Image: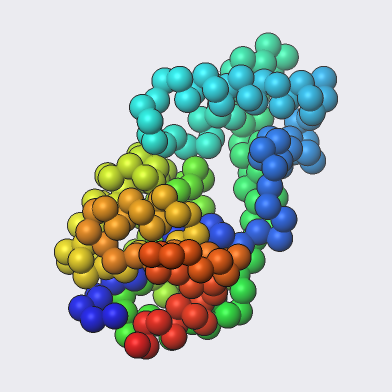
Length: 234
């Protein structure tokens, strides 16, 4: 592609995959199970109920697509549990958060195909990650864990910007860091709205990563990173 200076990538399910896609309740389970603080709740159902109430309570206070740190959810959940003394609250919050993040990382991997192609592309283009994520520093750590820590010029996450894709502020922030116009950036990701349509409306060139390999009319897409590499060589 002519005149492209930067490649912006989504992260989760684009670069980093999970062995098993989580169900909605799994996020609470990953914090609770084997955390060492399970005894403060009657069981997982009790924890899940509290977790969902707190999640909804926080969402009511935010504007559409506004982001917050996941640890805030655990803090509020613990504060509302009368069985946990004030002196114990920080310890319990930290154990829930650490357990969640340890479990999450254990389920993540990067395909060798993805790793190899990214390293090759970095010889010709500047690469960056623009991703939604609720764990501060989490995307950076996942990339480091998978030998990709030095491949990207910068990482922009919703937790740092305060807004999730498809809010325009996260894209604008990334474009400012790139120091070029949006027309000189190619955005690649697996979310049709966040990584294809919205960036396109903001002037980016876009390629949709459609892992199912379904070629839809009028949509420029690839089904894997080798196909992406071939397109970029054209």
